[in-house]
Image (tube, rainbow, N blue to C red; front, side, top):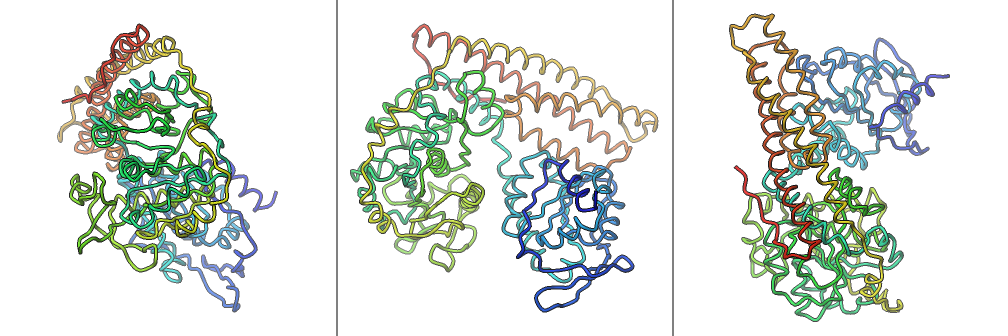
Length: 624
């Protein structure tokens, strides 16, 4: 077996590598020779000889006392890579990003990657436009525990010959890491509130449209996702011509305005658990029964209680808690939808799941418009027409940056809208979606074709009409055995109760550890060994889908702080570690107790539903 095949075998053993297939156009360099740790190459075209030095960046070397996550831009030379590995903590994780596939080809042909296999080593050999997507995927793995210990290292070639490429990759890494930090999950109060809704809405899952049977139901038919951006004003008049020709999916914010203008969409989307969704968009509203509602089970149950039309309740996928619910309810199959964070994301995800193509976006500005010399965030005659209403929560939604506009130039956007746009671009690229941005204003969505909505209405005018409401009504419905589900929930309660007892016992033991500045070293060593024993509790907590959902951000933040501590036997460091672990145990115990209360309430409510007794709406749980 030659070097190339051996290296491929090494990489085949790793589950986190992201590698593009090599194409002939990628072969823009060829290896000439190696001398004294340096490597010489010939660049095509032009036949220019250049050298890649084996010199490490002494000002940016790994910290041997910390478990770091090091993003290395480029493979460099074996000499430089060896210097990095030798300087790093044995548990440091390396992610090598090589945007030039010809260099990666050279590494496969000449390096011995078995030497790297003993280390925690991930290869991202992607063309520059695919690096961001790969980093985003890596940030959904256990690497997230190291976000406080990130280092970006540029190898000699990218430091000296392609600094712009290295800078762009560093910006991409930072962008994706910041995005992940902002989306670690909800705080505990919101999380327990969400789980309360998830469980309360199981009764509505029974009789809802079977999401698995909805897969590819409208394959090849266009869909229009109507959002509430300021640019909708100019092209809302074209929507009636698309009725019956395309599946029209409206976000909840724009529904009332569409109905007021005699535009009846086929589907309305909601995604948030908050009371305002009910108060603003559903309470007392006369919504035609022909409009189906799609929303995850985290929605306020009262909305499902009162909604007259068909209900589509997909699981946000594939989160562990929803995998558990799918199995426990028997509502499984292709019932998971990656719905992002925005209600418009859910609209696009529904259209993709139903097989629609193209998927047309309109009113999807993702930028502020202007009216009478002032910034506006939404279309007129909506609840968020006032910019202060849209941005009153925090700076995340306020005007903060200028980005490329639909027609070129710059438009003003917010951090929130940048995240929404990034999700759209990732979905388009990752899933090969045929998306047309017909907003005619706002921000440019890369990967989406741009066309005026009026032109698209003309294009599809001759399509045979489809009664989408009737088609949706004909999709088979879910059947849930509520008694059997309540029994499985009882079993889960016993698991949580056992976990709580373990957490309380572990917390007591940790608090009993005496660690002070003058503690003898042998006692400190015993304490260090004792601190390793919390790992089993942590692993079992993370494995439980409900506990993971409930305290995921807490676990991440505490684990990041622990991983950021230097690895040496020092009284101050060990005391910090002990206190962080005790905090984790307290969180597990407290969260478990709250979860048991929710499970008990749900089991009682399911019994009331089976006996046809009145059902009270799930309330937001106040926690100290």
